[in-house]
Length: 318
Image 1: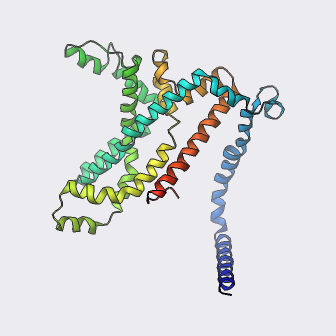
Image 2: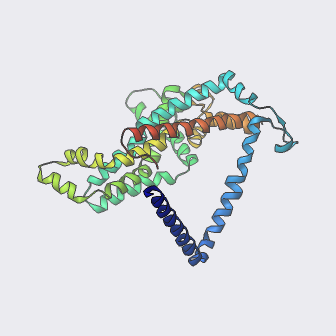
Image 3: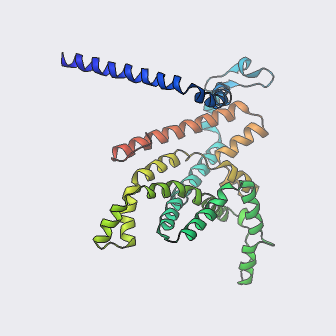
């Protein structure tokens, strides 16, 4: 009887919630009209094109179109296993993404921690503004700046090396240096922007915690490690989950604008490989199969990481 009453009460609450929701929606019906353009945009440009994934299972022919092209099932996916170029691009993607996870992801947190320690509001605002400015630069612009700076003939970096008695280095044409500058340029471009979420999280930490730590004689570094970082744990976990989801995507815009044939063995990632197959070679079905495989792996990584972090007792993304 008790269980039956509980179910009835829960059912009544659900009905009441639905009625309230419908009532509020009707009350603000004119405001919901402002959402209509965005909803239509998503339906037309985000959801309807999903059907195009089907060409990964077909031998797509431009003349025949999506509907009339021959169905080949998993043939394109079997081809992935035997493709040496795919294996190279896969290794490069994972390697570059792991380096970015290790060096680029913490850069936003480190910058946020040090910005938070700056007490002068003008200096703090200036550092934040300058560090975030590069995020709004196109990778075309950043690649152009790097190409000029690292030029073996007239680049500033090589000028300094020559003045110190060294020989010019072809930074973007040597494999070991290319990866180094990929990481450095990504930190330069994204550290300021990535720090925003951590700065917002730090601002939400109770001042009383810092006051209590000060009473106990804690200094700046102790407060950082004993108060700030533990309070940032949920935010760090969320960022980590999202970043791990990009492990199979090495940032197409960055690599595409910086790589060249001399460093293809270490610079060719899945995104650039798919681009060449689809746009240059017109192998639409095979490139779609690789892209679908890439996205499924990313989704699986996000789900696994989320569950692992949940088991560790931290908050996930939901």
